[in-house]
Image (cartoon, rainbow, N blue to C red; front, side, top):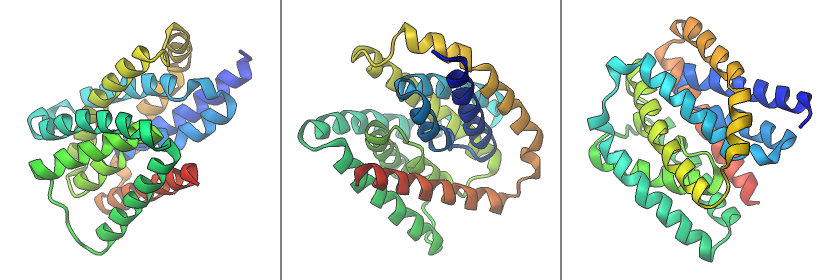
Length: 237
């Protein structure tokens, strides 16, 4: 692999990790399209590996605000969501599923802008986890459903709980990718070579996140959710 390709992918992932460490999610939304352009084999395996490391770092950073008990319903929902997506993809194309889910995310954003507040109850978190499993499996971007449910949480709790959820999701995804030969030593090796740039970007994000106001954080979440919905629809079309 050419050194320039590795550098471009590392910079794209660094930008994505900076966004996710400040907002709470968005690494795949920012990085995946760019990484795919330079090295398609890094998607989704290598990106998922970087996402796992990022989630673990953020979990540690916000460990005092992390609530695994509160996330248990989302964890439970993520498993059948992933399995359901696998079955659906046997009968319909990934593009068709991405199209439907992308439209659903945009609808949820519109509802949020209409001041309809979704409370993070156990039932809401379960279905957010389920939808995240569906969307993550079909588009590799599974953060929006969880972000929409948690958008009104205090900034630290939002980042902490999204990080905890993403760590769980990435482990599930890597197991599935390994079982289907889509994640191997090759992906791991290059992922380790790329990691210094994302880790540095994450460190920088911690130094500036105090400048972000709560209302800015919520609108940034909605913008990222909108972008992910548009990307999903674009993939479907």
